[in-house]
Amino acid sequence: MVNIGIGRARNLTSRPFPVMRIDLDMPVSCVDGAFGDLMDVVIAPGSRRLTHIVVAPHDRPDRAVLVATQSARAGDGVRRTSDTLVLDCTVAAISRSDPIHESAYLRIGETIDPGPDWGVGIQDDYPLAESSTLGPELLGSGMAMEYDTHVGINFHRIPKGEVEIRRASGVTSADGHHVGHVVGFVIDDDDQITEFILEHGHLWGKRMVPVKAAAIDRFENDELLLTLSGDEVGALEPLPSHHHWGL
Image 1: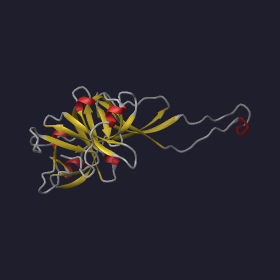
Image 2: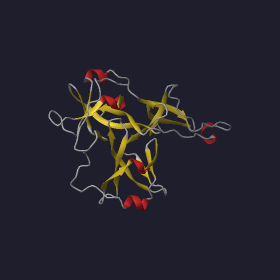
Image 3: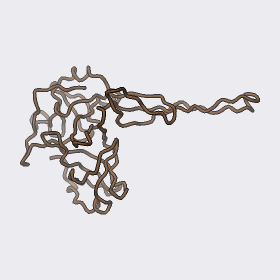
């Protein structure tokens, strides 16, 4: 995990307090050049702090590393735009960090053991070679070969007790409806989440909707659950269609 820096660099705006935009999938640079992309964020559910970001080189998700949020700042608008996240370390330093991407080959129903100091973040199945049962009619009476009962899983190691959210993470209303996906977060100077942006609607009518943190019921791995009903979410005021949701 990278935790390098000389203190929190702030992105001061016209708002009365320092805020920073965390745009999932945004470009990531280091102090000496471009690095890759922001993949996911890691959140402490109890405190609702965005504690870490997950970054990886372009097209290399298997090289994803964990970076403390306090080591990141928004681009300064002079050398880099505000659409870029800048890390307080060099490309070489972050490249030496241990990747958090791991794979497991498990029996169906078996759980991942990430070790005593880690939890399991987002999980995705990966395809295994197909296998089939060869019955007694092929192998002879009393002989049979069973199906392979294993599954392959890719996952991220994250701090124990925390959860991981990505751009594809679903948002569920209080009455159980899927209402969209997370696009990004806004955090204050203590890394506390103040709001998130919901991509709401269907293919030809998608809207970017800011949702205050008070409307979040809880965070789970790869999912955010709201205190609002589906109708209440639908009534929220979206951002103008020409407006990039960033600050």
